[in-house]
Length: 201
Ligand SMILES: N[C@@H](CCC(=O)N[C@@H](CS)C(=O)NCC(=O)O)C(=O)O
Image (cartoon, rainbow, N blue to C red):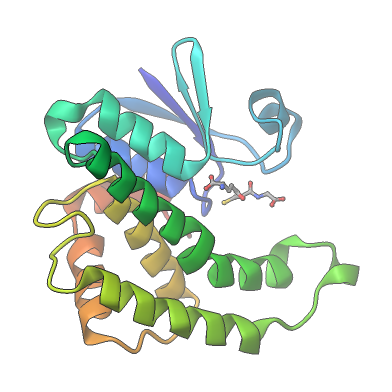
């Protein structure tokens, strides 16, 4: 059985959501960020971490793609061929290094960094996030989901980020992006993941 390691309110929510989408059984193991248990599994001391037998995978995007590819019959991975690989990689890099960055930056300066290095990044984060919402709007175009008509691992990542943004009251000034987040956030698999420990509360 898969072991999903993380703390409540962390990006482990993505891993639980992905596992629920795939219908794979798992155990949620709670560890604190940067605890000895987390460092034992991830040199960064960060979560989430997935344990699949002898294999340990870190970083939420990599974990979700690994799971989607391992269970390719469930249709949550890349479109076929090298072009499909480039497409999913492009979306995942956009999601983590662009869309998520302002959300994460604000959160770190609010709660995570040592108090003496925290600054008010609120206005810059809001500005950057608004720019990324426009980018996501254009990237989505008329698609239902990131990779087209079917839900995939990319939508787990982006959906989870949309949930963060809404919880953090970041304005999302795009009907298309809001409709997309409504579509992905209302999936029953997400509700099950939240009930099992993937919730922010
Ligand atoms: N790129 C990693 C980021 C992991 C990460 O930053 N996790 C947070 C919790 S959601 C953490 O462990 N933070 C500890 C810290 O920054 O000190 C991923 O997507 O999994």
